Image (cartoon, rainbow over all chains, first blue to last red):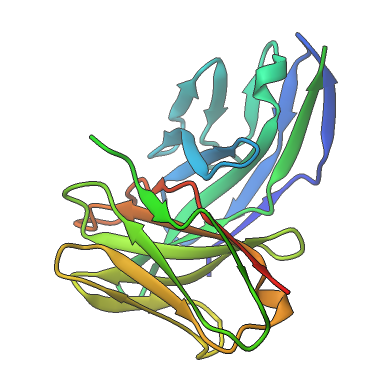
Length: 114
Length: 114
């Protein structure tokens, strides 16, 4: 079945540093890929998505490119802020009995210090 | 449009009791999925309901059950609570009409079992 491997956290960065959170996947076919973010005490919010190979999803300064050749969907941001401190989840849907089931990575906690 | 709402937000129970959690999806969404989130296991899929029918189920014991009403609202029940059931329970909704869709999450219900 489909699976997602995400880099372990926590990741601690200074404000304005460059961020990369690695995500690789195993899937049959070409599923959409998602990044979700979870701020402290809240549920998950969709951060960005890409629906096909070479697509770049972007939102709030974050970007991720769907790389079929390396089966990766790494999340990047050029200059992080304290408000970006959260847990980030890579995810992909898979078909189970004809219906969608979403597989999430283990999450990467990001802490940005001033 | 109102987002996904979950009630209650916090709950404290004792071992052996049962609990019912509620989720109201975004208007027009017919699919509701439930997830359990714990520090040790991460995000784990419980089940998905669509048009009042369970169409996907994760690997949880029969103590975990759910249902969906004709207005798409969903409830999740856990009977004979165990300490290990302490977790954040998230529900997510989507229209359910096709695969590869974005899921929209509620804020979660935090359950503490003493």
